[in-house]
Image 1 (cartoon, rainbow, N blue to C red):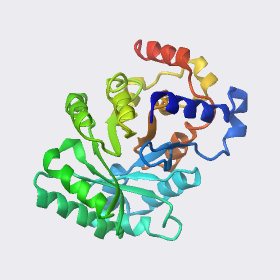
Image 2 (cartoon, rainbow, N blue to C red):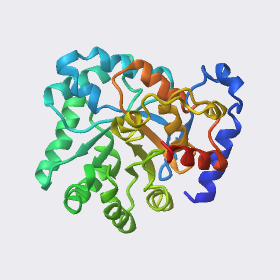
Image 3 (tube, rainbow, N blue to C red):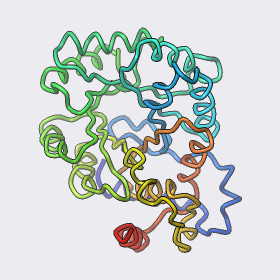
Amino acid sequence: MTHATSRRDFLALLSALPFTAAAVPAFAQQKMPVRRMPGSGESLPVIGLGSSKVVEEIAKNGDDPLRQVLRTLVAHGGKVIDTWPRNAANDGRFGAVINEAEFRDKLFVTSKIDRAGKEAGVAQLRQAHELYRRTVLDLAQIFSLTDVDTHWPTLREWKDSRMARYIGVTVSEPRRHADLESFLKREKPDTIQVNYSITERESEDRIIPLAADRGAAVIVNRPFMNGALFKRLEGRPLPQWATEIGCATWAQFSLKYILSNPRVTVVLTETSNPKHMAENAQAALGPLPDENARKRMREFIATV
């Protein structure tokens, strides 16, 4: 997908949305916008769930918090659930929940390899199939480029054999961006996952444009810097002008900044709170900042 095409699609998406703060009640009931994956044309809702926290807490809190968060995401039109190998017992209960009738066939579920060695990687993918009760993973990824030269041929084999629909790689730290850039220049993943937020913008100038030029969907992680954004802004009110772009929370402030980049496909938000999931999903609705507003947002965040 060329930059021109992605921007044209993005502007078309924006033209369908109301652009005044007064219209907020009207768009509150809208379904979440979608964006196309460049390589396949499949559309994904723009807000997803990073499930690590809520799944890790299953042993302590049970699986109902997960169920409630997923129910909220789906009710708002979302479907992307990003996962990686954790405690097998918790992952098994996660697999049970996503196969309940209200979620079955409604979710786009990912998994990751995070161990070195071919056999270890294959074992992780097979375990994901087993625990998630799926014969096909929607997206298989290599976490933080772990042993990428070993695992990438494995992922290509899995895609060719239809055990994974899409394949990709992830990073979540600026120090891995150079490695990701090098990988993108020699390979063509279906997706990349990269850290990006209003306060962590290193991927904005090189990684995200390169991914788009290489035909990869861009999945964003750490939109709140794993909670560091909220600590930084604790006790500070939103600027009054943030209502002009439909922001009611600091989370929406960062999400709207990210989503106003037309090359971004999906943003993963990590929460175990259904209310926060709803607020995150609503960031996709209504007005998004234009270039002048984006500049104003960057300048503001630099002062706090």
